[in-house]
Image (cartoon, rainbow, N blue to C red; front, side, top):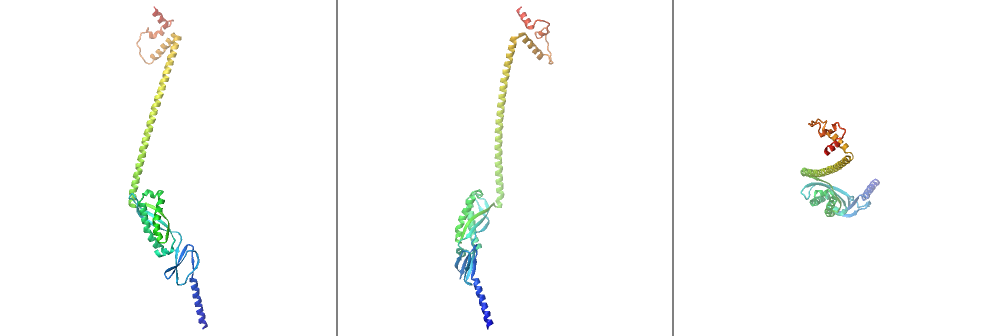
Length: 300
C-alpha cells in the first residue's frame, strides 16, 4: 500500500512539474508571440522576457518582428517606347500588426509573399510604363522605387505588414530585343563618330585655309618690303653714282667702261666690232683720257 501511494505521489509530482514547465515560455527580443486559446487570440506579447500560459489550453504562434525581405526576380516590364525589360526587385518589410497578420495570412510569410508579389509586379509595370529606359538608369530611379513602394503599401497594411522600402536591383533587356538594341546603339555611335569626323575635317579645312591666307599675306608683305628695300638700294646706288660722276668724271667713265668690259667680254661671247670703236677707247695709246679727247673733238 505504501509503495502504491509512493508511486502515485511521484507520478502526480512529475505531472505537476511537467505542467509547470509547459506553462512557462520565453519571448525572444527578435519575435512577438500570439497566445491562442480555443482558436482565438487571447494575448499578444511583444516585449521579450519570461511569460506564463495555461498548459494544454494555450497555443503559441511566434512571429518574427525583425525587418525582413523577399525577392521578386525576372519580372517583364514594358517602358514607354515599347521595349521590354527584365526587372529584379527586393521588398523590405516588417510585421507590425501580428493579429491582422494571423487573420489574413495565417501568420505565414510564404502566404504573405504570394499576396504581395502580384501587387509588386503590377506596380513595376505601371511605374516603368510611364518612363523611358534611360530614366530607370538615371536619378529618376530613386523616385521610381518610392512610387512602387507607395503603391504596394495599402495592400501590405491589410496584411498587418509595413513596407519599409522597395529596391530595384537589376534592369536588363529581354534576350529577343538585346540584339536589336545593341545594333541601334552601335549605329548611333557610328553616326556620332562620322559627325565628329566631318566636323573635324571642316575645322581642319578652315584652319588650313586661314594658314594659307596668312602665308600669302606674309609672302606679299615680305615681297613688298623687299621691293621697297631694293628700290631704296637702287636709289642710293644712283645717288652714289651721281656723286661719284660729279667728283671725277674721267674716273667714272673709266669705271663704267671697265664694268662694260667685264659684262661683255670673257664670257664666251663673240663680238664683231671695229678696233677704233668707241668701245675700245681705253685700249688706245694716248696720254689723254678718252673723255677729254671726246670733248676736244666735239669742240672742233
